[in-house]
Length: 588
Image 1 (tube, rainbow, N blue to C red):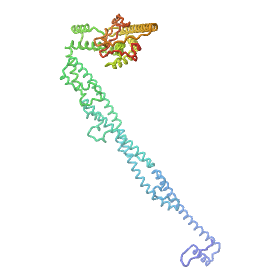
Image 2: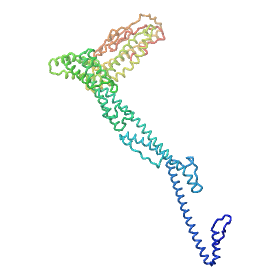
Image 3: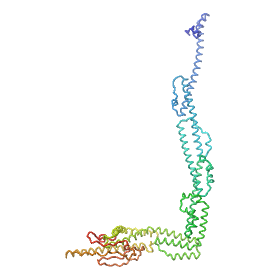
């Protein structure tokens, strides 16, 4: 090994070169040969190399440790950044140093790690608080309050703000659900309170059977909101509502019986007022009964006792009650135009009561059954009877219109003429509907008779026979009108021929005669209104007469005469007026 270093006498430092130079001086002084010198130098070089190797290894080991520490720090930094949802340390306000020595990089990462650890601790605390509230509310909903006492396990691998927002959103939903459940619980409790008040039941014992926390002594936030509590509350409310419905139905039945018995026996109003609290709910809906104690059991029992007392009293007044029911039955038949024998029916009732072979309750039940059947029959006849009334009214208008058309003075400008004109217009419209009305009435009557298997009678007269008679009389009137029109046409033709032979001659002026007033017809009453009952034999063979003018009029019609509000007027002698009886037929 060549020795080039020399001792620096100014610095007085001992270096490898100065020591090697000193060794050479010693070798020269001793007289060592070159072989020994080379061997010694090789040994010195080897020892120096070993020292360098040890130092290099130590330095390499230290560098590896620093690199591992830097790698661990970077991994921990990346883990914290990932857990906290940070993209880089630049977001924390710390510059990111990726160059420089290892120690410089470690020194740059250290404050970031410290800040991230602090932020992680705060984030874990936030997660723990939110999860604790979530766990507590879930325990309240599930009915397991011990869940709220357990510490929540926080997943430290995901502490991002997004995950925290999800937990907070879940907490808000649970808080809303808790609020809704609490509202439902309070509504149920309020409903139970109202129902217990109406039914006369103990509210406190009823609601505490569901859950002890539902009484008024506990705070609102301490009340149970579990699924089981809500289900039991709903079941309790349903049971109370059903009980209320049944009690109201029972009370309404008793109230109906009371009113029927009162009406049958003409009970004075003073006695009735004692049970106003019972009868006031006779037509009430279930939700409409809110008065406390309105459906209490003692009130229902009181009404039952009164009904039983009145039933016993009714037995002693049986005849009076039975005749009252018979009167109701006769009234139903009269309105339905059904003929019965009321005298025989009353005699039969008297015989049954006097014989004692029938129980009063059975007799009244039988009469109630008859009344119900009579109402059903009257209801089945109602549509046909309504059309019969329309038909009769149309017949009255038809009769009035014929009388009106016969009056030659109907167009005189006298008082009330415009009213008769308007009525005539309406009457013509109504008369034109008679054929269709009769056709419909016949079809419905036949359908009714096929369904019931009996003849439909109107005050004892078969309705189809009445309609057939009307159709026959109407056809006769139409034939008579046709003959009158032909006769008139023949006379007018003869007059025209005579005028062509002998020349026209002026007709004498027609003197203005007195006003013609149409009186009551043979088939009408004194006020021009016909009897509402139509007979099969009525007016069947009516007489016919011939007037001085060659016109024949039929008195065999079943239509009424002109009513008292008809005003007869004289015809004006003017060429501008044309007789309606010539231009318009009296009936369709």
